[in-house]
Length: 213
Ligand SMILES: C[S@@+](CC[C@H](N)C(=O)[O-])C[C@H]1O[C@@H](n2cnc3c(N)ncnc32)[C@H](O)[C@@H]1O
Image 1 (cartoon, protein in one colour):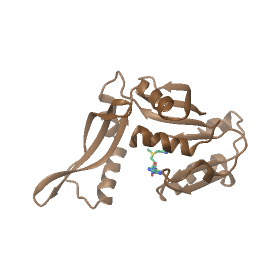
Image 2: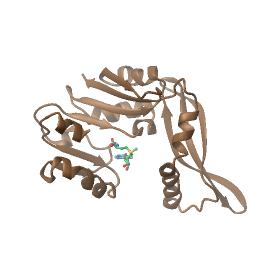
Image 3: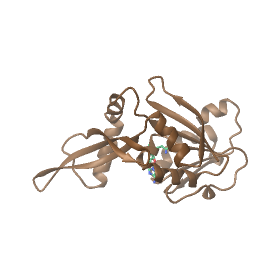
Image 4: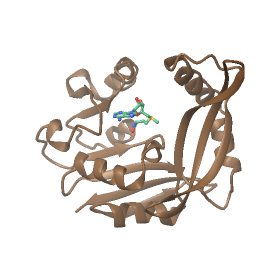
């Protein structure tokens, strides 16, 4: 995205990355500094439950806040609505990327959680929890009740043994809104107005731009 903005002669004043995981900094720095330059690259190790737009300092021009990688699905709608309202100021643009529960059914979700990087993610969650998984994770998709009504959730579980019995560790769970729920999430739950939506060709991934009122 930064490359594309630079190519289109956008005047980028700074990039501020926020991540709870300190190990994300070097990777992001390596990728983004060659594009934006070290003086415009800033990185904050922080929990987005705790930091707010005030922590990013004052900036002239338009601020675009991104929530990519289906990260929004990791929280219940009302909780994420509060987080996003806190991370933005009136006039900011929010770009969020979500995998949808679409006409494509469960297949695209199963395909995503079957990818090697998602299996590695489950293994790293097992390691962090000192659990020795005895097999690859399994994927299940089920509806749950949320403030937006019945909402699909995709979860991965890794099997392990404890005192002779088989147990499962929940390694990831992510809400999969319909396109309509994703819009409702922004307009009913948050102080935002959806201004643009893009879907991938197969209709399973949505990029939503919303303006903070
Ligand atoms: C799926 S990626 C999302 C990519 C990133 N949010 C973006 O917009 O480019 C998930 C990232 O969010 C980070 N993360 C998860 N929970 C977080 C939290 N509570 N506060 C800040 N970062 C968090 C993880 O460490 C991981 O690097």
